[in-house]
Every structure is written in C-alpha cells, then in structure tokens.
Image (cartoon, rainbow, N blue to C red; front, side):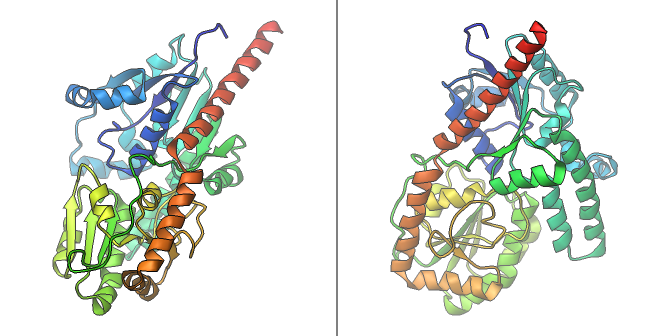
Length: 417
C-alpha cells in the first residue's frame, strides 16, 4: 500500500444506460454510491461511440474512467439458435466477446488496478485464465435456479427439455465460475446461503437491494374516482422471459377475474420490447395497455392504485418491488416475485399465489383507501430505514475493500517469507 487510493475495475457485460432493466439499475446505484469513496473507479463495458457520447454525463456520475470495448454485431436468429448447442449456457455464450476479453485482460494487467469486480456471473466468461488480482463477482441471481424454474413451468416437452438442458449447463458453469473469485456478493442472504451450500463458495455474502430514495420519492396513493379509474401497473423489461411468463399468467388467469368485479379497471404494462404474442393477447382482453420503453416509470407507478409482481419464475431480488414501495404504490406479489427481499406480508405488501386470491386482493385495494394508505406508508418507512442505495453501496464497498486488504496482507507475508 503506497498511499494512493486503490482502483476498482468494474466489468459489466452490458452497457448500463439507459437504466431499463433491474440489473442495470442495481449496478448503476452501486457504482453511484461507490463514486468518491474508498476506490477510484474504472468501468468496463461494451459501448459504441454514439453510446459513450450520448451518456457521457451519466458515465461520469458512476466512474472516474470508462473503458469501452466494441459491441458485438447483432447475431441473426439462426446463429443465436446455435448457442443452444454450446457447452456454455446461452446467456453466457451471448456475452463471450474477443473485444471484451481483450479489454478485460488489459485492465487486469494494469499496475494501478487493485481489484476487479465482475458484474453478473456471465461476465466471468470474459476473465483471463489466471486472475492474479483479488476479484469479486457481483451476482444478481442464482442463475441455474432461473432455468430450473422455467423448466418447471414449461407447457410442452420440447420447451421443458430445452430449459432443463440450460439448467444443467448453468449449474456446472456457475459452480466453476464462482469458485474462481476471492469473494462473491449476492443480492439476498438467501442467494448467498445457496452459493455456500450448493456450490461450496465459502466467501459468499449479501448486500441489501438498494433504491434511490430521492429519485423515487413517496406520494400518497391516488383516490379511485372518475379522474383516476382503478389502475394496476407492472414494470419490467418485457424481453426477459420471466416477465413475459408473469404477465401472460396475469392476463390469462388473474385480469379477467378483476374485470368481473371492476369492469372499469385498467392494466398498464411498462417495459421495453413486449413480444408480439403478449400484444396479441392484450388485444383479446379489455382495458390493457403496453407502453413499451419509457424514459421515466414514475408517472405510471404514481398514477396506479396497485403495483403487481405476478412472477412464477425469477431469481435474486426484484428491485421493482422496492421502487414501487418507495413511491407509495401498494404491492401485490406472488412468493417468487417478492423472494429474498425481507418484507412482511400484510404489513409491507400483499402476498397471493393463487389467481383468484390475487384478483381479490387487487379489487380489495381498489375499494379500501385506508388499506392502500397503510401499506404505502409502512413500505416506504421500511425502505427508508433499510434499503436506500447508499446503504447497499457502503456494504458493497466494505466487502470489496476487505477483499483487497486481505489479498495485500497475504501478498506482503509471502514476500517477507
């Protein structure tokens, strides 16, 4: 240790802006909280010249240095299908890049870089064979578990086989990759425990899911009246399979039951790239709107009376839940939708797994303004106390700093010997 501030390199397999997915939001919040702290920050990710220029100000808010690599050209659908034959899981094969691997190797070899963080276990595919510096994997999910859950929900044998095959590949990859790192940081204690028990990753710990409490400020839930018809909202990337399955489940099994009791109700789905199959399903169902990508989800959430998370598949934690709670919108969720968040059903949100009960909870919140207000205030108070993004960033920073100092101490002992 020579008196300079240590440098942390953060490897993201995707460009973080716009923040249109939960993983991007979480990583951006962590980096923003780290900026100006114990580390100088170097961010590595794919980025075109246009992206780097357009989002320059946002990049400056999360790092001291940005190292881009040339993004891979979009692969035609038939080439992406061949990834199914790879020994790697499809989402890992998609992140493999010669340009990315070279950029990561060059940064790892720099004398001024002291510790390297790989964002998502997928990013480990970009790591050099030998990791001479302390490394951290920031993993947002138990990835193998997501494939396993998709297999369990698959409706036909072929899909079930495909998901099961990917589950086996990811389980092997995840177990091998995580053991390479000095430390693994998970987004819930549940996930950290699974890494320790299932994969034998002793140095796995958890940080809370953090949300920007200033940006997602609280407002009183709106009244249900002629100016504010009863409204349900869902937010999330609609090109992610778990969200697609959840919204389809809601449209097919829950929403028709809501409309029987509240025919004037509206359902708004906010998120990029909804598939044609869901748009077609929405056209067959009354009072459903898909917005596509929006610059700001807040007006849609603040204009709603209920925020739903009807997920049947997923992993990690859903940052969308805390954003809704921070803004004051009452949440109704399945068990998987709220998994790992450390919130209490009946106090901070409403837990329902069966379609009829889920629909009944929504209609009940439409009718009961005092219940909406109680859930809204209790959820915001919890998020204020435990889940601000600065709290999560400080815990993350401490874990990384410990990994660096432990490595430095070990190296010093080795040199003396």
